[in-house]
Amino acid sequence: MKLVSYDDFQIGVLRDDGVVNVTSVLPDVPGPLQCYRMNLFIEDWESLKPQVEALAKSGSALPVDSVKLIAPVPAPRKVYAAPANYYAHRAEMEAGAGGAEAAAGQHHSGEFGMFLKSPSSVVGPEDTILRPYDDRLIHHESELVMVMGKHGSGIPLEDSLSYVFGYTCGLDITVRGPEDRSKRKSFDTFSPTGPYIVTADEIADPGNLEIKLWVNEDLRQHAFTKDLITDCPHLITNMSWVAAMEPGDLLFTGTPDGVGEIKPGDLVTINISDVGEMSVPVEARKGPNPERETA
Image (cartoon, rainbow, N blue to C red):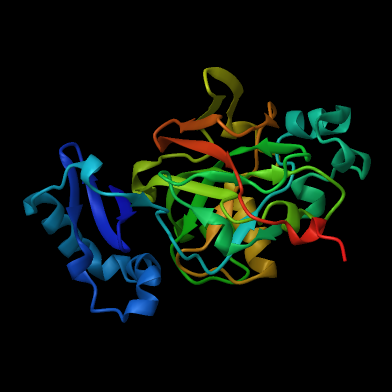
């Protein structure tokens, strides 16, 4: 099943003929909390699933172009990420692709473990990546993203994939430099996700997916998740030992080699086999930068 969030945090099932609204399976949520609808939906998925499947079959569909698709999970509690989780990407960074960041040395996911991105960096497939600097190197990174489905701490390896609700595409936008990863990767709009969640039952093996990324017409990244240094089950087990996972949390699994600069006017397209495709434009962020202001 393909699930979307759209417009004012409505939840829909994507069919061939459009989007069927299934928000009614949830109890009413107060306005300020509506951004968490998808989290609640995921948490109660097992009990809601029969109603959702019935509505998906019988409900009338809205044309996809009549709604605005937003991030599938608009307000995740946590956004986990795996650093340098492909050997080829680690090698390109050590060879100088990361500029000042490379000079600080590269540690892959098995050594460095994990880092966290700000949940406010998450945007959807119809949003725009905003470059906060015009004189810094800013890269695209294409990644498979796991959407967690259950609460879990210290999740056993043999059970880890059962905690995954589904999968989506993600872009981990990155300012290269010597600062801490969490800052460089947490600017607003730096975590586009979408266009929908594919439920886990439709992905037989997350370790056997093909990832491609284009900037405009230029194919920049092409790899397979079988080449992850730390695979999906181990990422879940390792990260949940540090910070308990909750329904709707996002786990970015790492980017392959081929990272490169993005500039205003570019269109960044990611495609993951069996998961989906989205294209996100790049613009310059407007307004003053307090880091550059002088007394």
